[in-house]
Length: 286
Image (cartoon, rainbow, N blue to C red; front, side, top):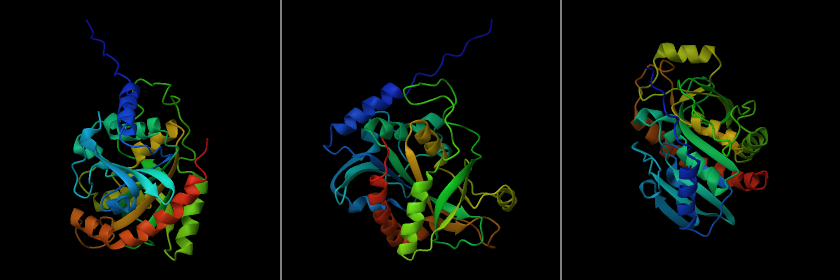
């Protein structure tokens, strides 16, 4: 007799409960969310009227275990704009299932977030990029071997087969590139390849990624983008080049280098976020 696998329960009720808990802790109702990657969490410290909620206190929220990810949700104001900021995220390489990796994005959606700015630390494949460069993500290549939408679909989140032809909303990309130019930051635009990690890539893998059109490589972001788009949330992605990818330079790669570079460029990075957020707030959609 063949056993039948019981379908996984929908995360919609769980995400709704988590959102209700968060809303009980603050009067702010942000429509913009930010996810801050490795070494980039300092931006959340600039918010006024801030409420800080450790992930472990939010019902169902996964806990980040990576150095450089503070593991708390900060809801506050940048000027007069209310924002929800995740200081750190979780990853597949921490042992989480795809649905757990994207659960925080599900919760942001239930909070009423209509636009997200996703940031990450990435390795540069494109030799035109330098360590510390900021890159606006134009598109991505999912090589993580998993898709967070696999399994039963709950139409309350969105359609079964969401369109990904403009995963990173073009008007947001134009805003970010324009503001970077105005600030004299010289940001680039490129394609981000997501691998599962946690080991850094081999030089042969980097040559492969270059061949298929990737400019950057990292271990995050893509699952969040997929579910954000399913929920109708507009996305801006920005990578900080914290190291050159394996084989580009004749030197080993370390997470310490990632953290050091993130700390070095955080001033420029935060200046770009401060400049971009008002424009995003004016274009969050319905």
